[in-house]
Image 1 (cartoon, helix red, strand yellow):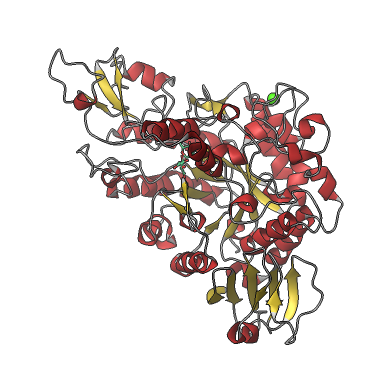
Image 2 (cartoon, protein in one colour; image 1 turned 90 degrees about the vertical axis):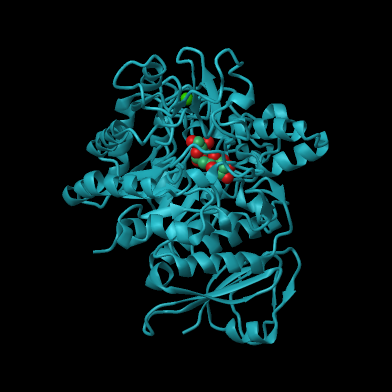
Length: 569
Ligand code: TEU
Ligand code: CA
């Protein structure tokens, strides 16, 4: 029996920015339902829904105050049930975002925990701190340890009601849950059961490899994430995943008509750590998201730029393609930037024949010729670009503002701060979906919660829908090509050649099955293929992002931002 979540593509929706249906400038569930046909036409097999739960929205929903209630800005539980039902009619499963490393500080559990109301007293990670009675609790020297957060602040907040500190690896309004308290995992199991009973197809698990803090000892001082060694991929974390799989997910998979699946966001992981989280035999996660392949041109995660080299990208892709049982493939999500602006070239955005159109199609060719389950982030299928904000005031994301404060503290000049923040801000992928050229881009009739990119007039879904040469049409073609090819879905990956701009690999399965070679030029310059590459790049055209009709031994160059897939047998 084919594994459904390996066969199809998964479409990620960031509800705030997808489609507004009630004119408040914020996307919502009924907006998503109104666009299900467009999502189905793409060949979508499941929707990963970023959080729609009750939340004060400090981190846009990744700070949950009630896991079993829908936030009114997104709609009602009835709307959510209708989304699940209407999606199922189109053979699309709903994958919920499971955010269990932390809750919102407005969650009932935290409000009772800070007041030591049983059984919630130890639901969070509380600590007396190093303070001696009478010392100022807000003085860092008294903090329990020297850990720093993912949002570039100290990781402890003093709570004057409890008279103790609590740990927060993200924002101070996102206190971490204490998994050393078995009651907490029982609560989590109930949450999974609540949503599986509603018929969801699986879970995308948020920062799922930092749940278990083995000790609260000081961490080795580091530019980013001091203390990481005490909570990343700990044995206790693996035990949690095994329990959730065995006691909840596998039970539902047994009775449901489809296998519930999990994909876990795994921060700061190497290949070995990712195998332990997601190898089939481990029976923990089905897949894991790592970040390595998107940081070829970055140092310090995605925050400081460096030169992009196609050969470095091929080296990293090869490691993961050949290292994991199965990959979760993605180039964009709500924490990253737009790939056409990041690894591509977004000049001439929205125009036919532009480098924007070529590189957007090149990224689609790459995503659907690699081995694994492809994830497409909303707007990627029409080639949406990074935001066009000119000022930090236009940015809403807390991480970007925290990074700005940190760089200011270290006296980075304003121009450099803005240059680097523009390149890394998560708001780049969070601008409203550009549905058409009307005011509000068809996203909303009201002022949107975040600015719409002015290029929406020429870069939008409506302009591409019926255009056979559009980026959208090319995404559909590549998704259909992958879907019809056992080799592209399950065949082996082999690196063939690479330079600073050229990247080539093959995909092969059983001899009788078609074999493919894929070649990419990650530059705006025409590049000459050396002898070896030319010999390897022979065959019948399966896909070309510049509309090539033939390729033979006389062809010696790849054009600017060209992507070519040839069937070699
Ligand atoms: O992200 C975890 C995470 O590491 C990212 O926050 C972070 O942005 C980093 O930049 C990635 O390079 C998850 C969610 O995806 C993110 O939206 C939340 O802010 C975060 O967890 C806290 O829930
Ligand atoms: Ca709305």
